[in-house]
Length: 179
Image (cartoon, rainbow, N blue to C red; front, side, top):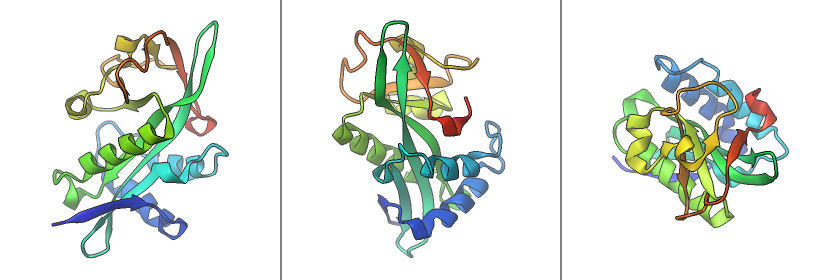
């Protein structure tokens, strides 16, 4: 099976809501609100349409969705404004999982984020999955989560080597996350 990755169009928003619901329905790590989050993020003034992408099958079915939002790193002396991407969420319909769809969605967002000038991408997720793509505990980069979480699940990846040198602090998510 072949599929393509492309930017979403507004008429596909409702389809991605259904993908999120189906993809996370049986996930151990889900609180079942991923579909609500994407709607909130799309209404943020900081929403970047190029960071909202879909995977489409050769039969023109939308089979996957991924989204990046931007975040800040704050510490006692400075704020690095909106230069960090936050992956939330990445979802693939159950029948299309384990076929490379999620990998291509993630790689496409990484390329777009690099072109946009983001320094790194933050992920709250499965280290066994995201570790394969170079994501490591954010604590490795002296970046902290704004909530209590095991370090191994709160991960970061520099989009270029040394992007996070001399940067430390706490990630500050957009308001839609409710953190």
